[in-house]
Image (cartoon, rainbow, N blue to C red; front, top):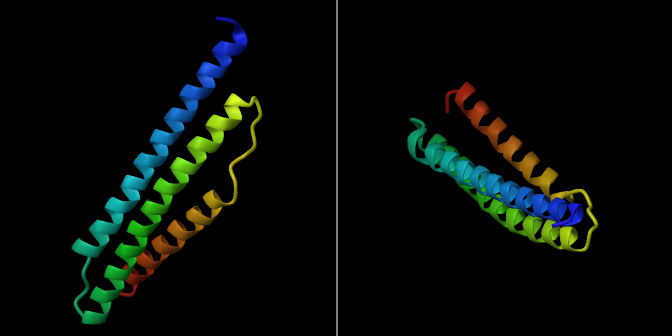
Length: 114
């Protein structure tokens, strides 16, 4: 096996590890959503609805991470095969902003005693 083939194999394995990491992250975000919706209910009906909405938002963000993981894996795989590489697109930034906004919502809800 020549050096180019070894480098390509390492790149493929790194792509698979990255895919697995995105899946683990998505599972964690879904788990946080379930925990928020189930274990952080407020006292008032409005706050229960708020935590349920935040939990559903986290679960939705986790599903978006699964979709992004599949897309990014296949994109990187074809780029490795074609011996070219481009940085990930704006979807990653959008998902990170969504998860950050949801996290701020949870912190605000807890801080204001909903």
